[in-house]
Amino acid sequence: MALDKSIILVGIKHSGKSTQGRALAAKYNCEFYDTDDVIQELMGKSPREIYNTEGKDSFLGAEKLACQHLKSILESKPVIVATGGGICENEEAVRHLATNSIFVYLNVDEKTAADRIVREAKTDGNSNITDQSSLPSYIAKKNPATIDDVRTCFHNFYEERTKKYSMLADITIIPGSLTPAKVTAEIISKIN
Image (tube, rainbow, N blue to C red; front, top):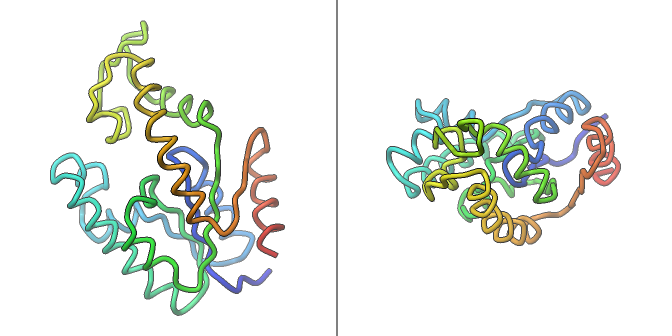
């Protein structure tokens, strides 16, 4: 199966971008890149570490640099790219990825995405957060005390970001209860 344009996967954290990226790369027999991995490779630090120690602006700069690096690859051949959950807030980074690309938005419902975040949260067993670093940075910086606080913080980000992803998307996929393999098939059918 040949790919004419690169596929750029966008969506909220834990929407399945990396899982789908690897599956699509296997189906199309092309390379797969995760912007978080590219940031780590170029900067020598994880995106989270940059965000937490150097601030949001430094992180956005690192993300832009990673996408600029990917642009040179996108210009030479079609690939699959999974983006970080906040890419929708980095216009310059998005512009770099728009080279000969199709943006696919994995629109996971809020409860599913929040459940995935909460599942990774470290608690005392009674829904009290014991380790802020177990949460996404944009939630951790709000210092939520409980799982309910995490869900409240996440709700605001979810509402804001889903609007932005929708505006970026050429194709929107709603995974719902589909298996990862069926989501992959759905993406392929909408691209072809």
